[in-house]
Length: 333
Image (cartoon, rainbow, N blue to C red; front, side, top):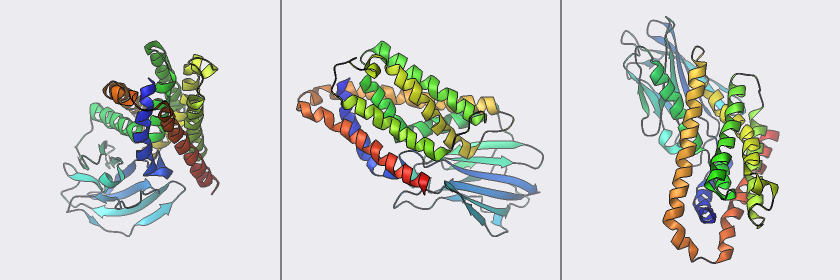
């Protein structure tokens, strides 16, 4: 499993590009609330963070929908929210495309939510690969579940801090049985706090949580870099303890992203379960990819000098320390 450490170099270089936002550029939200026939109140929310050199994201509506009011923009610690009205006339919004331009540059998704005057609600997810959502007349439970599962899947795979933590757990364990126990413990931990946070049973400010998530990656990197024999430390003998404990913390981070787009009032269990399933599928896909990479590159890495095996661990720890400092400054500022 030690050969996996070299893959951290690639992850580290990718992390360095957007250093301040190892996780979240949070998903955007387009909400259309019908005020009268064909007239909708638009709510457009996006993360306040923007990667250097990327284009501005903007909502895309059908050509027959025209703005009829000036946008009112509000800013908080994490997001920008704009409100204005559009008139889509007799054609309306059903069977028409709604989406976001500029998702490809930022590598984020956005949730589309349409609330009709008669009480119907439809939702969809737009992605860099599929930036337009055709608004259906009615929403099926299957499409709702699929939308939130897709959000969870995209969220975990775009969250480099979460992935580095899972990556570190792979390096920490020594056997397949230990790997299964450790990953399961991490899953249980973040599932518990994700559910509690979204049900408003446990609410924690997002910025301190992001600092602590970075700290969890740093602690894991330090443990890996100690050069002790396998199982010499408590965490080496019981890696699932670290996985479960820090899993509780990472679940609060997942909840922060999900809170940005919200849960449908009448389908909270389904959407929460689907989002969690998406996270788990993405996590499993990442673990499988790392194990495949280990087999593919094991012969190449075997001929490298022994000291080079520690370089990726220092990259991992350095990135985590940088995130801790940046997020601490943001939380205090």
